Length: 83
Image 1 (cartoon, rainbow, N blue to C red):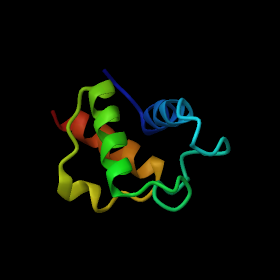
Image 2 (image 1 turned 45 degrees about the vertical axis):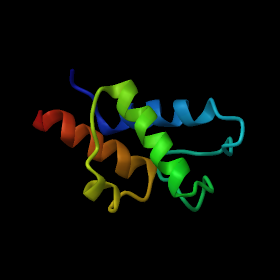
Image 3 (image 1 turned 120 degrees about the horizontal axis):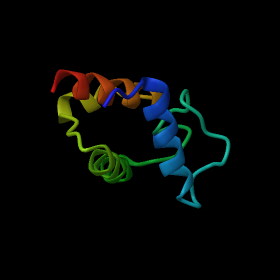
Image 4 (image 1 turned 60 degrees about the vertical axis):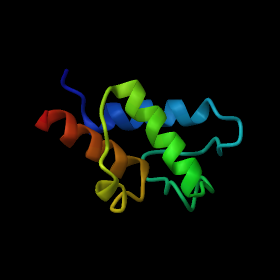
């Protein structure tokens, strides 16, 4: 499966928009904590949902470097390419 950062980012945005509490004007450069108003628990729940959807596991040490939706997408793509 050859996912791109853009396709994974689009999937993440689509998943986020299923939540009525998430702002409607989000995109790949949206900051997960600041723009989406996610606390640490919401971030973990959201990442677990994306992991299940894409069949990938994001190590906790990699989460520390993720700020935007595109950052998360790039991390997922690199993890899937490495496996």
